[in-house]
Amino acid sequence: MTTPDSISDYPWTRIFLGVVVCVVLFIAANYVLGVWLFTAPTAADGFGDVFGLSNALFSGLALAAVIITLFMQRLELKLQRLELTATREELKGQKEQMEIQNATLARQEFENGFFNLLSLRHELINNFSFGYDHSSTRPQVRSDQQQRPTEHRTATGRSALDQITGFLVYHMKHLGAGEERVEASYLEFYDGFESTLGPYFRSLYHLLNYVDISDLDDERKRYFVSIVRSQLSRNELLLLYYNSMSVLGRKGMRRLVGKYNVLKYLPVSSIPNEKHRALLDEATYRPQVLDEEG
Image 1 (cartoon, rainbow, N blue to C red):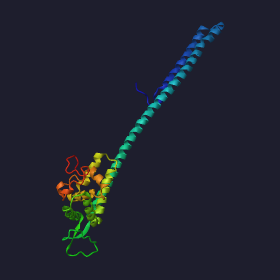
Image 2 (image 1 turned 90 degrees about the vertical axis):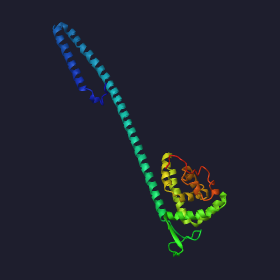
Image 3 (image 1 turned 120 degrees about the horizontal axis):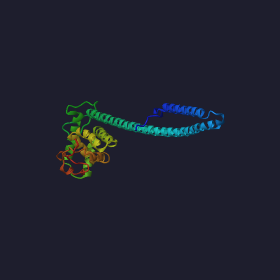
Image 4 (image 1 turned 30 degrees about the vertical axis):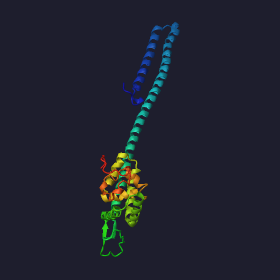
């Protein structure tokens, strides 16, 4: 049985007209019958009793009206419940759509921020520039306003990072073991290139941390970190290796490097001093681990 959408869907008018016609016919029948049976004046009392049936009929109709009213109220409540159920289902669907839209907007906002930071980092690296004495093992940093001596050279962009790594390899290659000794040597080296390495590592940390504190699941976080890692050269990974063991990167950078295995593609053979290859624990440095990351 199909439930009507509203009370107006019921044929109330036809029912009402049918009841009225039946009542009229009944009264007319009673009247004709009374006239035919009780034509004598002495039968007036009997003639009046005929209409007692009409009174009983109207009493029954009144009761029927009450029952119909209750039925209509019951039907009205049922329809209201159906409407409330339909409204709740509609609101539930709208809520789900809003959640999907909010998740999409949040993802787009994160991706826009991520690639903007990545672009700014590339721009920062491309603007690196410093002069150095090719015959010296120590950096000779100069400003652009200084006249460049003929024996000096200029490195820019990632070439600057390659040159910096060359100085690092020279300093670390013949250095003894001991984490404190290595750290002290690295800090001395870092001071010579702070104007370049400072912004470089801060931008890298900010980019990794931006991914780490996001609401993405772990798989998506590893995916975006893998994008950053894929753009790090071997020389940059070597710089990051020594930075992670120093006080400069021990708290913040080292945690992120280990959590997302940023040093994954730094071969052990690239570390210039064999005594330094065990300075970072396995939680931080896991070279060439085969997993699903890119």
